[in-house]
Structure formats: C-alpha cells, structure tokens
Amino acid sequence: MTGADEVARNLAELRAALADAGGAGVTLVAAAKAQPDERLDAALAAGQRVFGENYVREAEAHWAERRAALPELELHLIGPLQTNKAKDAVRLFDVIESLDRERLAAALAKAEAATGLRRCYCVQVNTGEEPQKAGIPPTEAVAFVERARTVHGLDVVGLMAIPPADEPPGPHFALLAELADEAGVAWRSMGMSGDYLDAVRLGATHVRIGTGVFGARPPKT
Ligand SMILES: *Cc1c(COP(=O)(O)O)cnc(C)c1O
Image (tube, rainbow, N blue to C red; front, side, top):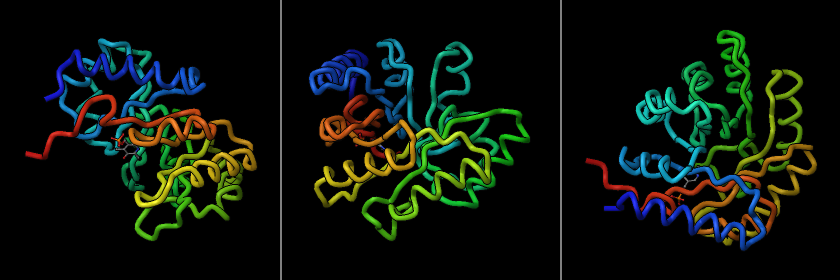
C-alpha cells in the first residue's frame, strides 16, 4: 500500500525529472482513477493541484467536497465521455481532454449554454488509428479542431493522445505535436508514467501520470 510520504516523494521525483528533461513548465496531471482517498489527500498535501479523472461519477466522489475547500484545484476529464453526461462533465471539469466526436462537441456546446459555463477542450487524436480506441483520425484532426471552434463555439486549446500500448510512443508524440502546430493549438497532452520523458522531449505541455504519482491502482473490491 502506497503511503502518504511515498506519494509526496513520487511527486518530488517526478517534478525533478521533468525539470531535468527541460520540462519545468510542463503541467503534471495526476491521473486519479481508482485511487483511494488517502492518496488523493497525500497529493494535495504535497501541493499537487491538477488532477485527471476517467469517469464522471468517480470524479464527483473524489472531488465534490475537496474542491469546495480548494478553489485553485484544476480537474481534467481524460476518459471517454457519453453525450448524456455532457452537462455533468461541464459542471465538474475545468478541462475536457477527450473531445473525440462531432455529436459530443454539439452536446458540450449545449451543456455550456445550459449551465452558463465556458470550459477548455483538447481534441483526442487516435494517432495509432486503433479501432478499439477513441479519438479523431490524424488526417481529420485539424479540420475537426476548426469545426469544434467555429460550428460549436468550443474553446479548443490543444490535442491529446494515448499511443498504442505495443509500439514505441515517440512517433505518436511527434505526430501529435505536428498536428497541434498545424491546428494552431498550444497544448499537447501526451505521456504517461512509462513514457512521459519521451513525451516532454517531443514537446508535451501536459503529462498524465497515475501510477507514477500514486503507486499501483489497488484491485477492485
Ligand atoms: C490511466 C490513464 C493515465 C495514467 O496512466 P499511468 O500509466 O497510471 O500513468 C493517463 N491517461 C489516461 C487517458 C489514462 O486513462
């Protein structure tokens, strides 16, 4: 079981490693899925303020109360979003990194109008064109960013990708950076516990790190 001091040590080491790799300005998004409350509190105590979540319900359980006391907290949705949860997601998350289809863009625009809230978005790109994985195909990504902005009025700030598990990630990170340049968006959310240093060298602005921060996710009970 990962203790509080271990989470604090992990965070300090990650921040140092990011700085060494030239990524002192890179935002570390702590991926909190399936992590127990005491590890979240340990990360907060160690000064971590940006967290990623995969599920709307779990994010509500993790953050509804904690956030009331921490207005500077920044929550990112990094998992797929169903259109029927768009309004809940817009209420809860500052950034939705998993914008991956036209119908979702329309639902999010409607949710912003209904709530009066404006959020930031990343378009998820399926750089490996894997059939089972969410994301816009690379060849359509630039046009999709444009449509999300102009047709749906969403504030698209960047691109996000999860490279195929069984390939070297470097070419996927390089492709995402190139597409972000082409689309004229600043954020490149790429890199996880196993490959975040490669991602930083290839221009990541955000790395999403779960086990590297919190330790292994406990088995579901
Ligand atoms: C779980 C998850 C991460 C973090 O993965 P680790 O290997 O635990 O660092 C990053 N991004 C997404 C989209 C995830 O679902």
